[in-house]
Length: 532
Ligand code: NOJ
Image (cartoon, rainbow, N blue to C red; front, side, top):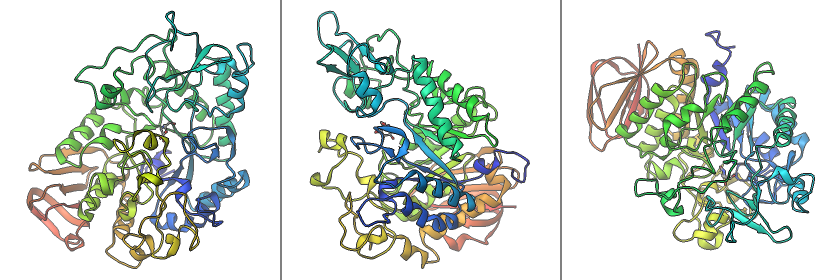
């Protein structure tokens, strides 16, 4: 319970941190990160000031899609450790005030999951109905025109039965049939299994996609106005995604979450283009997801006008009581230091300042806090199946998944010297944690100060958001009663007027302590928090 008496304040005011476990910290010298590695870095996370961590999947997986193809939802993959390690992590993190979110992958399993192995054994198999099967279309071939997100038809022929099964991602990731009550009950058991172990909640993979049109209707053709992905696929994802019945499943889990005290969190990977559609995942504000990732924001350029518009629309569209989620990087998109900032640290600081001061919970991705850019990936390094398939047009998601550089040392402090890492380490001399620890004005030091300021301020933790008018290329807003945030997101100096307060945080430290009564002169790509 926080100072305001609001039981949700711990996560509303808190900052979450996404860990990609394979690339975070390797404790046993095999070149792959693991749970004991994460435990060994909890002191770092505590000092950073985060309230929670989200772990990309650590459950058993043959790694066709690096953990997002689950073969056992209730056990830890041996690459990462054991269930006992997970329990230790949850307890050790809890002692430091850090909650643990796991990644729940309900849209599909691995083709090696025992359910699918059984389902494939024939039309009368016990688990047949756990998956989406269909006869060929009347003229032969796949049942309809649905296309996999990862390329090609979303249907795979099972030669033995003559039926097709659905896979919205890799062929090795068969989609579950969420019309089945048995599937729903199995997942009730899975979420309870983890919640009973003290896990605080889940990030839910492609939760907007879980349920498909019951009649398996053809998708309509894409038009010139559609986003690039749909134009490339040739069809709009109308019937294999974003079906209204997905909300019933999420509301069912919310009801389950609310049976725990304190309640457990549900944060959705709501990868939708329309903010109005995102808003629907919050239900009436307290009966569906606690939070949904804002993909229009992630996908926006680092541009004051574009971002402010998205934030204002989000603020308008969310139901009262609903709480936004802001993020700039994850394991599927180029890191913000590359994509938004082009490696420029002033831009990185502006992006971090925004993420850490908007109304809503920020999710930093590992490395954001030190301004880590994408790793160098050559064609021979590529492990992401999508990168292998589409190289060189699309190089896949390996660049944002390279190991965390902890130190300017062989192995980067990620693993032991001389050990080959699962993806290339990159050059840890350029950017690493240890060097930034020693530098009082580093990006890491700035991120720490921003998190501390946010956590200690009612305005920044839970205060309402209000835009202020400001010159083009800048963004100014008020949080709560006493706090103003101003960011110059342009290449020119800018003067922002009608301000009052003292700068308590600046991307440029020289600004801090300045008392402003009227106009603040801001260098290009700089930002400040003023309090009064
Ligand atoms: C979204 C995950 O973030 C991504 O990594 C994965 O490939 C797909 N969902 C399929 O699970």
